[in-house]
Each structure stands twice: as structure tokens, then as C-alpha cells.
Image (cartoon, rainbow, N blue to C red):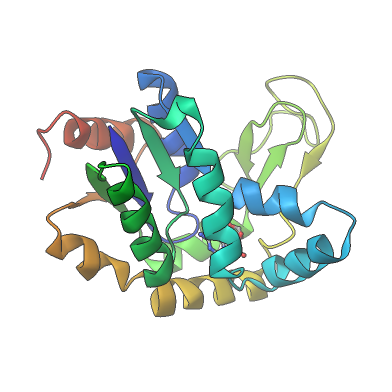
Length: 218
Ligand code: AMP
């Protein structure tokens, strides 16, 4: 099954993609991780990408499309994949459709995780994670038991994303509303769009997504 997890930054796409991917054995392709890897390169394109990313803007469509298509061309993506964070513009969505069409394939579901802006700002600006094991935390909702130490692996290497400050988050949300949310009618017209409320316990959101994957949800 070929699935897009859709929604604003901080809606929980990454968390839900990881849960779904490990439950079903499907590859998860997280475009933000790909961009962070590009931005970590100490060359000129890397520095340019880092600057764009840290401002909260979107990186160039063709660069993103090339990177995603290269990964999707690998064997482990032939049957199933979960896209988290891509597509984010109409240009990206139509490139993905054309690419799938050439392979005589198509998306099966686009699942929108719905969360209002007010919740998102609080969610994103409070979050941090363990660099060593990837465990995620939040200042208010999930602090570490011992300050500065990861509950899961004991590492003290905890970090906040450089684009999780209030100014960049506001810009990321503005980009979402201006450039990404127009994809909702695009996918609705194709009969692919399903929506789940993104508030509530993580397991509850996963259950709603699973129902949609199993063909039971709205
Ligand atoms: P995310 O982790 O999904 O919030 O992505 C972090 C940043 O990476 C975004 O704010 C963008 O700068 C960049 N990015 C991720 N995915 C895309 C995409 N599909 N198109 C353009 N830029 C992207």
C-alpha cells in the first residue's frame, strides 16, 4: 500500500509514520530527515539548504522531487511506502503522480492528521529529542524523568530542532496554509483523502489511521 501522511508541522506525522511503518513493515520516507541530511553537508548547497530550512521556508521543488524519487526507486519501496512530509506543493504532488503513473502505480490513501494552529505552536516549541536513540520529549507533556537525561537510553545528548523556535514555526505554518493545504482539494477530487483528528493519545490516533488503512475509516 502506498500512503501519504499529510498535515501541518507538529501534527504527529513522523510519530504516526514510524508506528505504522514498523507495524506493517513498510518503508517510511521522511522528507524532513532527507532535508536535514542535505543541510548537514558542509558544502555550499548544504549551507544554502540549512539557511532555507532554518527560516521555516520550503526548499526547492526540483531538489526535493529528485531526492524523493531516487529513494522511491529502490526495491524496498516497490510494493508499499509511507510518505511523511512529501508532497508539500502542487508541483511536488503532480510530479509524484506522473512518476507513479510511469510505473503503472498509484497512491492508495492520503491521510490528513488534523490539528489546529494554536495546539501546533505549543507542541512544536516545547519538543526536544534524544540524539542517541531518537526518543521524543516535550517540556510540558512529556518531560524526562531526570532533567537533561534521556529516559530510554541514559544519554545526555538531548537536542531541539533548529527550526522549532517560535519565528520559524510561524513561518512553517504560514507555508503550510499557503502552499501545502491546497493539496487537500487536489487529493479529495481524486477520492484519496481521509481525515483523522490528531489530538488525543498517540495510540488513539494510530488506531484511527489503522482503521483507514484497513478500509474501515471515513
Ligand atoms: P519537517 O521535518 O517535515 O517539518 O521538515 C523540515 C523542513 O525541511 C521544512 O520546514 C522544509 O524547509 C524542509 N522540507 C521538508 N519536506 C519538504 C518538502 N516536501 N518540500 C520542501 N521542503 C521540505
